Amino acid sequence: GGIILSSLPSTLRCLDLSGNKLHRDCMGTLSAVLSSGWLSSLLTLDVSDNPLGPSGVSALSRALSASSASASPACPGDPLPLETLKLKRTFARAEGVRALSNALKAKRLTGLQSVDLGCNDLRSEGLKSLASAADAGGLPRMKSLFLNENFIAYDYMLTVDTGGLLQLFSSFHLTELEELDISDNSLRGDMGRFCSEA
Image (cartoon, rainbow, N blue to C red; front, top):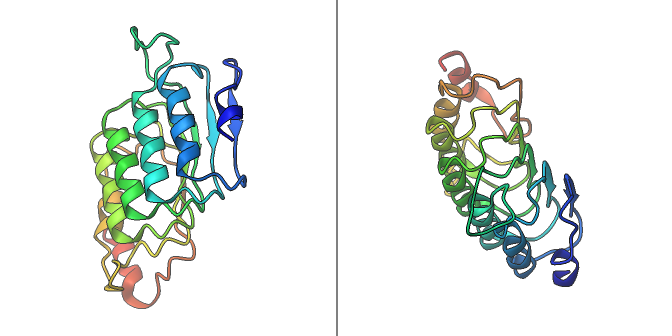
């Protein structure tokens, strides 16, 4: 995997690495490629269905934050023009999303229009991190956000915590959001009341 990743053509606009059993070590190689500015035209990155874990997602997030549209590390230039990021079923958990949120807060990924974080066991902790990135203006062009199957209304002790949802829904910075998938998150009973309060 590492040899292939380090040999990617610089003209790529879409890179689909989903379902390849990539681990965090492979993310180290991809991170080096991204940080170098080699993939300066990349618009879509899909690493879904790979067991990256929190550390792998964190490594990728740091690289995305450091990447740029310039092929010269000495001249960082504009942020990477990435528009779509798919991280579904990568075992990111709250720790991985926290790293992604830090990258978003650095405003090096402001071109993102679609992010898929489905099936990652984010819980309320992970959602709060993502919401804080939105509040910091890190997602100004976000149109589609997928958060399905993440137990986002519970913490890791299975205690009900809808704070992250309230924070996300109350954000004044998601002005272009058109699609929000929060399906299959066990938002049952009276937990749905917060929707009308946001």
